[in-house]
Image (cartoon, rainbow, N blue to C red; front, side, top):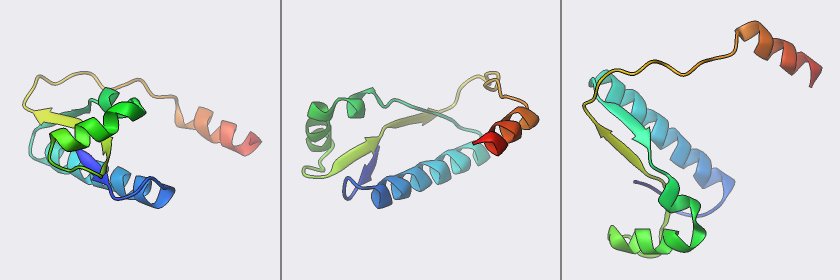
Length: 90
């Protein structure tokens, strides 16, 4: 679980960066990881989750699982040209 110090954009970015570094390192170690964010999507459960893991008063932002697993296909992606064309119109 990744826990932010506060509920504001600066800390959300910090949490996101930590998750990215974790995922990249897990991949380098031939581990798989995925998000299990349902417990932090319900505001009323955040405090209970923080207390459950021994961090009362903190703000759980991301829950991740990691381990060894079978390789799965990558998610479908739009072609780069479609993305760039959409940005030029914005």
